[in-house]
Length: 364
Ligand SMILES: [Zn+2]
Image (cartoon, rainbow, N blue to C red; front, side, top):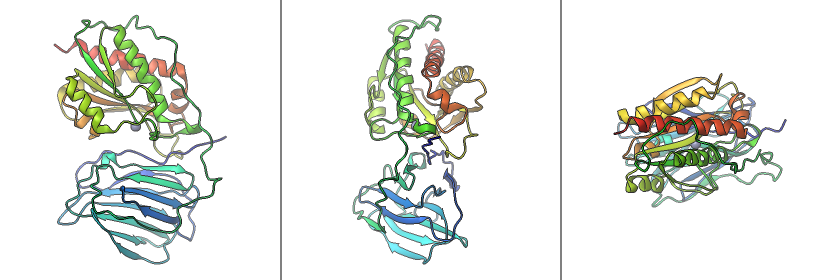
């Protein structure tokens, strides 16, 4: 069976704890799995590892005069520990062996650098290549630093993924809750898009495709109920997070709903489930609960991972009630085939629209 792997996990960060950003798989062998690395002047870290290496990435916020640190652990022992001086926002890069038989790459930032770990994702871009964009990093003065040859063999590609194109068949809103027509504006935010595929799951299922199809149908349903819908993207294009939020704030939307699919390692197919995030206020929590309840209804057997507080940019910076729903794991044995099915995506759209309409019914 052709499997494309994802090796990313977006993480909620609380306090100054060390939190694993990612878990993937691993042959334990003597030589370091880290073959080459480079941090570019654009604030993007690229890694080349041995094929299928299992990495773990961690974030620690700035404390007692020390800047924030991000480190990545690799299997296999580093031959020589060393420290390289950084530039601009990066104080130093260290290569060490925290335990025998392991390798650690540490990036230490200057104390003034403020990073949001919720925006940090280590993404496997091929079976041997990884990418971590330091979103929001002030790159002024940052010069490229790296070691080794990052190019990998042309055979090192993911197998072609299952492709999903938006459903064209109209979807009926009959049976959905009614709200006063023309009163509400809702922003629907399909996660990722364009060069950013979001999570990549079993059989190469791509989050950006899954969530766009669901989102377009949610929009149709809400519009059929007289709700004005603004989509942050309605095609496979890349839109940065700040403009998504700015637009919602500018038009004074009633609610903002970001639609995503979750991922953990391809080697953790037992992890499935539905979760919905909100940032802090009671109205956002209510919106999230309405959506979570409905999505669970159409996802039998998929665990309820709960309604949770999260610090994702789009729900933190919007100034109207907002939530972010994770409609299942593209890496999950149960969720992934469902997310790949157009019938299930239709059910998810009906569920999310119902949750939003239920919420709007309580808005005066
Ligand atoms: Zn996502």
